Image (cartoon, rainbow, N blue to C red; front, side, top):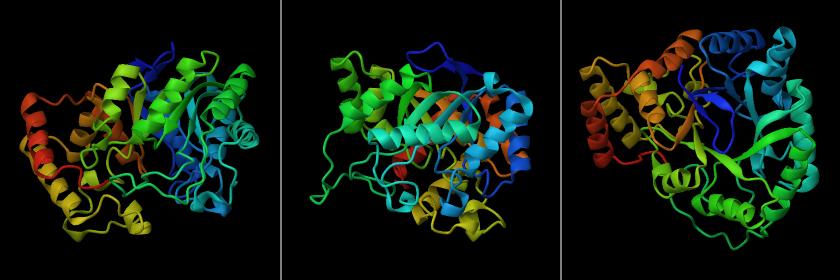
Length: 346
């Protein structure tokens, strides 16, 4: 395993992070425990979760993922071996069953306390805002279109004050963003620069893959210059970059087969690009999955690649990508395909 440090901290984390959003929906508690055991044995010490998980979100399964992780900690007593990250759900229609008050003080306190209880721990190493409260370009939208009905008022100072107080209480150690834009990222960073008593965002968890490299436009420069590390999620585009959906295939129990609404990475151009990437990987005796993951992990703005799997075979292949080094010919091939079919899945 390869390791790095969370920016602005001394916390050493694996460059592959175990994502957990399938635990409690596509994976049972026992399967989740098996995944965590194997990941830890392979040197992964960084787990990411959220109160919203498992996905798709549903009131009947609210926060079941955190509960499964908590039962794993209780069983083996290995909380001190893991750098643990979780998130507060933002203000969105599909999360209204959780709460509706966004990142107000009482909401943040309620969310953190709930996560701590379910995870059976006294602290979180990293606590993230799952997506912006304001109306902005969410999944599937390339550009920003201002919504005049959005009555969001800038509360970033107040959000950081509450997070500061939670840090002082020892409930969280560090804070990060998720699904954030360049404007929002800089707004948070500037607020903590102007007010030195406020905590600094150290990571940003956004989608990044061969099918979606929009992080490179604006956010990559911010990431490098401001040292706010990318935690890349969906590095395989909901499994599309495994190649298993090519040719119109619908594998049993696969994510998009079970939840067809999650077709963000399955449009015609995305599948065309995926076939091209698969051919490139084959020509260099690589698996498409490992080439796709190795590409993400190699980026200079990357802190950790968040992988997810529903089977142990998938998990083993994903983790094994850490040993894959892409040569210049492969990287040039990737750029050639990207230039012809850039970011087919926003």
